[in-house]
Length: 237
Ligand code: DX5
Ligand code: ZN
Image: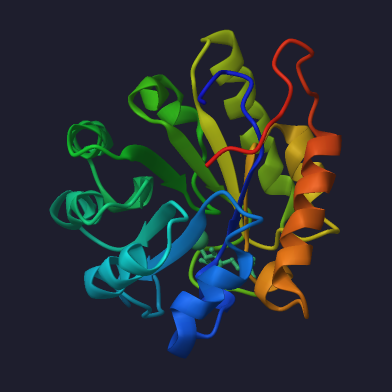
């Protein structure tokens, strides 16, 4: 189901999981979550190095939860479609890493995946509003991309609010995803600003019961968002 009034998406970030047991870590939350957020870092776009296509391929084979690949890499024009071809549900690449985001988005959609545009901490969203119809997802960082466990920056929610207003007035079918420092203390603010997809690494995998933590985050987000009466929130896969 994808409507302008969309159900809440909870996307635990595997960056905070045990990388030696990724399939098990995915299984721990699979009943409670909508997407698994996979942070791809190349040690160039950000000063951190995580994983790439072989790990995404292995994850795809080991879980039914849709994979939400967040590419923090240089040259997404070269690499992004490969993640679509591996079966990622959504592929988000960074606006700062390309001069031609629209072509990449078209190629992602043509390869059968959702196209996401990611906006890092220091990048205004204004100049990207006009190209949002080319995208399914707008990922707004609520930290500086590169590492988990950082402190949420509430001032970055102004970008979420602006993008949500723009999407509403243009009747765009756009997910707005927030990433960085999302927890029980911050998810309500993000939801109120207009986010409808929530990445949480530390708040889920740092909890003693990750599934329960994800469930609680969903309850908080659902309560903070303004549900439409003719289209009640339901869990979406
Ligand atoms: C950081 C990543 C995030 C990270 C979030 O650049 O994009 O997805 O895992 O981690 P937390 O939820 O701990 O801030
Ligand atoms: Zn991420």
